Structure formats: structure tokens, C-alpha cells
Amino acid sequence: MTSTQHRTTVWPWIVMAVAGLHTFVASMTVSPDVVQGQLSRIMYVHVPAAWLAYLAFGVTMFASAMYLWKKDFRWDRRALASAEIGVLFTALAIGLGMIWAKPTWGVWWTWDARLTLTSIMFFVYLGYLALRRTTDNLDVRAARSAIFGVLAVVQVPLVHFSVIWWRTLHQPPTLLNPEGPAMDTAMVITLLIAVASFTVIYVAMMFKRIELARLEDEVLVADQTSSGPVAGQAVTAPGLTKGS
Image (cartoon, rainbow, N blue to C red; front, side, top):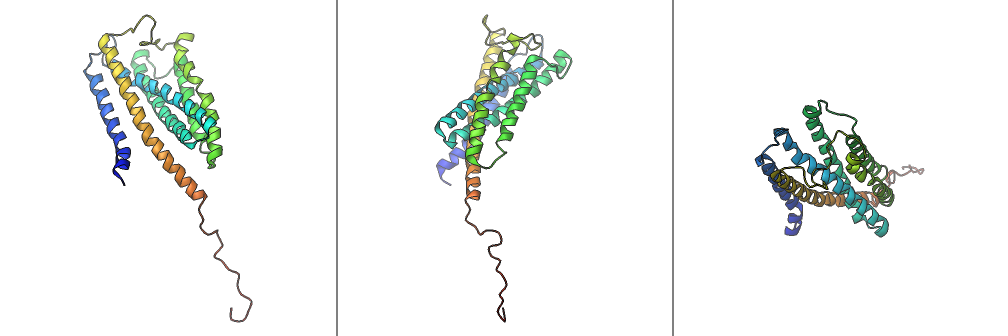
């Protein structure tokens, strides 16, 4: 293994660890919210996780569109990697939201517009990942997934603007508020630090997942083009001559 390959393999793990530690330190040193107390610290992971879901699914849409245009499997691998990361962080956002909701709303789950649409988005992109496993034909898989990836992104604006378009328990936008952030300055800065750190984590995860996707495709192609003997080829018919 060359030194370049070593750096490509290892550095994303270091970046993710440093960015995660950075987020943890920032979120634990800022003062808690006056009303919610220590529970408010969930926000510094919940909000960045939701942001990464938006970012990841947007990248999936863009990479899918680029595959349909260029027919280059590198774009297909980027779409896959981003979709998997998006599903992971959507699940994290939902889970943390439920932890926050129990002491705040008194229930783990309610059929609020934001919560319902987010859960639908989660299962739709799980469907995207499942669709990719329905065939081993790289061209068919990439084409089907690309069309799905382009269409599925319509859910992102639905989820984001749901708190504005419908009456909902979920609080309206805090940072992207026309009247300005409805938060203390220190909390805003901490939240922006967390969002930036999570974005760095996303980029590092993309490098690792794309690398893995490339290796998976190489193995699949090698299996499909293997020139090994056909089953039964080594079996010969018994001879009919004497002594055979």
C-alpha cells in the first residue's frame, strides 16, 4: 500500500473524531437554556443531524441527475454514499427528537406534520437503498436508482417548510427566521459550530463510503466476468470401449 492510499484510507476517521470532539466540547461548555435546562443540549446534535439529512439527500439528487446525464458510475457511487449517510442522520434526528419530546410534550411521538413527513422521508430513502439491491446489473441498478434519487428529493422542502405551511407542535425555524435568530448569541454560535462540524463529518464519511462502494463494484464486476470453469465442465462421460 502506498503512502497516498494510506492517507486516503485513514484521514477521514481522524477528521470525524476531531469534528465530533469539537461538537461535544462546544455543546457542553455553552450555558443551558433558561427554560429547557440541560435538555437543550440535544439541539446541538438534533439540528445538525437534520441539516445533514437535507444536505445528503440534496447531494443524492444532484449525483443521480449527473449519472443520468454522464452515465458515469462514479456519480452513482456518490449518490449511494450520500443516501446512506442521509438515512443514518435522519434516524439520528428522529431518535433525538423523540428523546426531547417526552419531557417537553409528554409523549415520545405525535403525528405532527414535521415528524410525520420526516419519518416518511426516512422510509422512502430506505426504499431507495432497497431498490439498489434488486439487481446486480450495474447499468440497470444505477439507472433505476438515479430516477428514484431525483424524484425523492421533493420531500426535503416539504419537511423543512411543514412548520410554516401547517399548524404543528414543532417549533418554527430558529436560525433562518425573518426576524432574526430567536436564541441567545452564544447558543447561536455553538449551534453554527455544531452544524459546521457535522458538515465536515459528512464530507469525511462520503470519502470512506465512496471508497467502499468502488471496491464493492469491482468485486461485483469481477464475479460477473469470472472465466472459471462452468459447473459440470470437468465431468466426462464414461467410455464405452473395453477397459474404460
